[in-house]
Length: 226
Image (cartoon, rainbow, N blue to C red; front, top):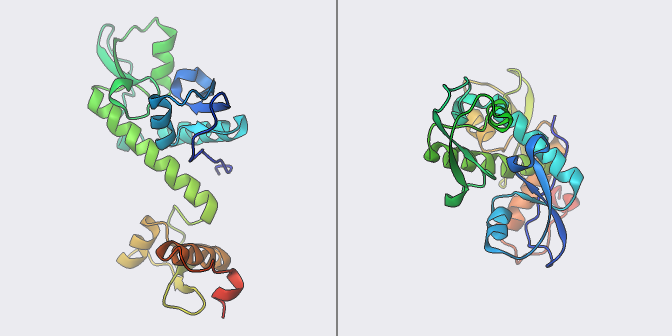
């Protein structure tokens, strides 16, 4: 299970150290940099690639590497060693930007090429690199939300009691018995709206209410039960 990590949402101060989540860092998957307030850095920030601590970026790097391994079909990267000289593509930082994609003739004797292949970072064209980068960006955002709100990402066993945050219920949640053939249950799961514990569903319900109308006073867990 992924340990909690947090990416930055606001730009650091100029000169402040930060950690960039990038395959350009090799096996570690990150680099330590100093914030220059450059256009590229703001793109990294929007793509959830900027982290405040080494611990955060290490955990994010592990998540991304595990995600790549477990989503071969979705990411559609090259899994077999190409013939020498075959043109392949990779993302320098996998941030989804136009200038990120780079084309190389594959060299089986090049250690960096072999590492890219091993990490699942080689593609047949630049569009595939961009699409994979977008998928990874969305996965990072979803994982951080999951870690914060603790919603389910995998289907539980049939009959398992789960909780759905419900704005129309006084308790703030609806108790459901999971059934994989119920389209509504599957939709809730895909949207990140099913929880294994009542308190997590209540917290999500509170967050949704405050998001709908941010001008109202923050609603506490105690108020949600009234």
